[in-house]
Each structure stands twice: as structure tokens, then as C-alpha cells.
Image (cartoon, rainbow, N blue to C red; front, side):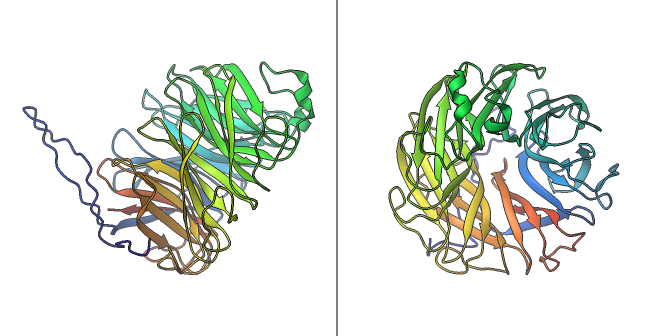
Length: 445
């Protein structure tokens, strides 16, 4: 990565012309230059966790907010609510809506549905306001919205403990599947379809996958893990209709058969009906945590997170924690692994596929050496663009003197990169701070 061209990078992306008589292919040049930076929020704490490009070429951003002023409209309590923003192609706010009640509700993932609406998931404590039910502490909470953000239906799934959902996909049959974790100790073994009661011995947290039909009715749910802390943060649907879940595991028993260290990247695949097909651990003897997964064009998967390890599956570490990206095949076999970072703490939270078969990674960095060209103070938002083999082609940090985090990034249809996160800096270039933390959206053309 020392030879990264920081400001000029030619990536050929196929672009179809509007000429009805012929299909013209034109190259799009990725310059690596910042096109615009936008921040949204109020006087409180506001963050973005997920971004997608919408069918109209704009963007939908999901996060959560405890502000009651500024850009946030119609909010009357200073607790966290899901917060969904609809932006146009230039990042200008078209509309934004909050969803929640009188307790802590945190949005984590958004998808646009086939009819142009949205599905959003996260975890919620409220049983009032927009929430109709809560079984105790946080529950998995999914909302189905129309194209204008109005609620069509909402459903809560959980038990008496802390149950979180972090990622959602609309499935091939028009339903939904979301992943997260379940506190099995508090549920007394409930929350599972098709397994024996002996699994009530699991505890702390389990990977938890839930399948709904198009109307939000529960079809099945399964949990997987061991006696320690296991949490799923990302999910994709596989070509055969099953699901691949990725996250981290601290366990070395029950469903985990080949642990590598303290915490590992842990991935598993289930069939379309929730039957476990394989599970694999990746990492070293240190702490390794995965936070997102993306499906590749060759029916494989990339998983991203951070690693403190220097051994076993990790070939090198630049210092403290590095961003770690791995590629596995559809049977869970490791194809390659790459790390990115400097001598301080660097971590990733999101990964998505780019048009050239490469990947865009969102995260944060404290480093100012090795793979990181600049640090603007404390944690910075950090974006990395790689080729299909995980070789870094571009990287850039954003931030100010405060603590800033990047959580998700995508490539849009024109080849530009969109990075979202949060900033606590009151000296973030081009921005005027609105509150304690602001939601930030950055376009790199």
C-alpha cells in the first residue's frame, strides 16, 4: 500500500449509454477527489450506521439519534430513535424520519425493497410510540416502510435479555432475513426452530438468524454458538437460497469446532430452511472480530473486521489492531487474507462490492504510518478501495481533532464512493458542527 496513488486511480467501470441503437461502453475515471461532505443532526448525538444507493440515484442512510432539534423533525424525547434519511444524488436532504418510543432504539441496517420502499432493522427497548411490543431490554426490531418512509408494519422479536439485530436482506421469495445475537441464558433456550433443548446450556450470546415472510410473519429462527460471547453482525443470501452469517466468537465448544484464539472471525452457512451446513473460525491467538460480509461475483464471500493477532491465519500485523479482510469460498475455505493499518488502532465496520470486482471498506484509524497516509486527530473515518484480490488501490482518512468513526461505504452507479459515519469534531473540514456528534456523508468522485 506504500505505492498507493492517493489522488489518481483509474478504475474502469462499465457505463451504458442511453442510445437505443447501440450499447456504448464508456470508462469512468475514479479520481479519488472529495466531491462533497455533508453533516446532519441536532444538538445531541447522531450517527449513521448503513448506506444504500436508491433506485432514483440518491441515497438512504440509517442510523440513530437522540436529538430533538436541528435536522431531526417530530421527535419529542431525548433518547435514541432509529433515524432514516433520504438524500438526493448530491447528498441534499429530501426527508428524514425517526422511529421509536420512550426508550433506547438504535437503527443498524437498511435495504430498499423490490417495491421501492425500505426495510430497517436494529435493536429497540421501546414498547410505546412506534413500537408495539418489547419482551425485555433490547429486542430485534424490524420495520417495513413505504417509499416515503411511512410505516407499513413493524415487528419485534426477543426475550427478557439483550437481543440485537445488525443486518437485513430481502430474500428471493420477497420475505426478509436478519441476523444478530440472542441472549440464550435469558431466553431459557427459546428462540430456536429445530434444535433440541440441550442447547439451553448455551449462554451470553448466540448468532441468531430470523426468517420472515413478506408481511413480517415469523417462518423460522435459529441460533448457533457456544457457552461464551458469539455475535453475528452481517449476513448475505447465497446463490442456493441459504444464508451466510459472519461475526465474532469467543466460544470453543458446541457449534464451534476449530477455535483459533480469544475471539475469532466466525462464519457459518445455513440452508434456506435454517439447517447448519458449515461453520468456520478464522484468526490468531489474539482478539479478532468480524463486522460485515459481502458476496463476490464468483460465489464467494469477503468478511471484514479487525485483528490484534500476529499468527495462525494472520500473516502480519502492523501494530495494535489492523483492518483484516478475508475471502472464503462457498464451503467456508479461506482463499486469501489481507491486513491494512499502521502502528496504532485501526478497524473496519463495513465492506461492499465494487463494479470492478474489488471492495470498498469503511472503518476508522488512529495511525499515521505504514498504510495510513494522514491522521487528523484521534480516530478518523477511513475508507479503503481494493482490487478483487484485496490489494489496496486507494485510501483516505477524514476527520478533525475529535473522535470520528466510519461505519459503511458503497460505490454508486457512476463509480464514486460514498462513506458514512459520525463525527465528534468541531473542526471537521468543510463542516459546521451541529451537536455532540453529527451524522456525516462523504462522496469521493
